[in-house]
Image (cartoon, rainbow, N blue to C red; front, side, top):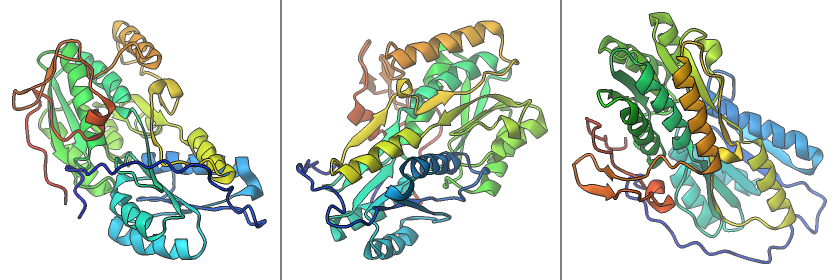
Length: 362
């Protein structure tokens, strides 16, 4: 299996002078969206990608055929489906989860004329692009609030898979929390899956039992928020607004908006301008926004959070600015030094102060 923790960054070759897609026919381009989980309101991450697809479908109307395929568990299941869809004439694939990266790489070589994009991926080829956002910026805001609101000084994190995107977010949240509360600790439970409601609930209950009074997650469902509501603690929603699942528990949510991105990339496909980019959108692009802050957050913390959001949006604050050391105590960023995009894109370590180990991919 292609290692997610030891990525091989392939050489990017920009291919210019594309001829417009379907220039010789009247057929609209066919675009496939692949989802790991159901495309409904019960899965925060996938729900937002599906909303983005619907926005793009409404925008293009009959000029583009945008279809989705849901409940695809991994690359092993994705690859034969993608092969068949390519043979059926699909011109483009949006793989909404990094679990499809291996399948996307294989397909990119087998079907060099098909355009493929992988969300939160980090490997590109001549016809394989990646797209993401600086989700760690939202995590930084969460961590700041958590560090000042927790009463037990224990924050529980339900972690999915040890991908660079998850590690970036976890590290950013911890750094923010420690910047305002040197006594705060993060307890982490790995579910080894982005979508497993039962494991997410078990992890949430275990963390609360161990003393956590605030929950964070990198998993797809609102189950941790529901557990927090039931047990009378706080939590942060992830990828979509989860307040409805925990009206008393929710401190805030990060909310993803993919519609503009999908519209822009499908337009580039139609116009023959598509290139295998590495798109990483900051909070200032509105790909990710912070939802309404809870009234349970003290006024001074709310003001600090709003100021932090403003500085992140303006590019005045970078969560990974040194001095920062790795978990083992070795140096990473010197004072005032900011991490490069390539360093963040391939992150495979914890920062100093986080306990526990990073599990192997399963």
